[in-house]
Image 1 (cartoon, rainbow, N blue to C red):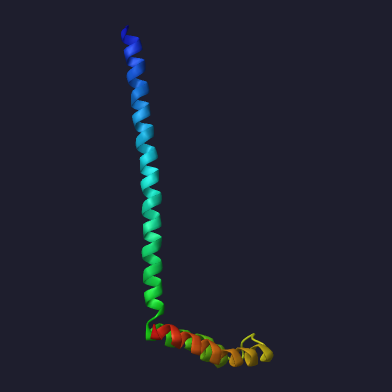
Image 2: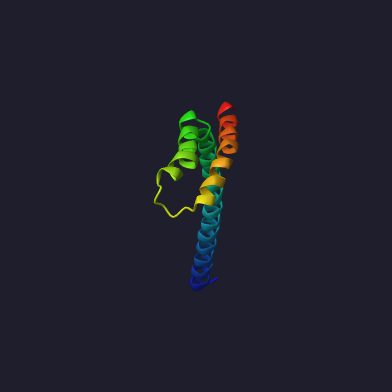
Amino acid sequence: MSLELWNTLATFGTFLVIAATATAAIYQLRHKRGGNQIAVLGELRASQGTPEYVRALHFVYSELAFENAGSRISISTRKQDRANCGKQRATLLRRADR
């Protein structure tokens, strides 16, 4: 075999190795991203169960919307939100007890 043929085969082999490495890297990045998403969802679920979070969410849903009398929220929407506030608070408190 001539040197040109050896050089061509070596170049093609190098290309195959680089392509396999890139494929493995993409697979590992996808796997790592999935693991990160699971970790973030776990932390998010844990933080949503804290009493501080429940109190803050209750404040936003019930009190904050009604403190701004000059806001663009209509009166009918405010009445509807006040009616739903008790249901939301009960749901949030059940989540906090878990």
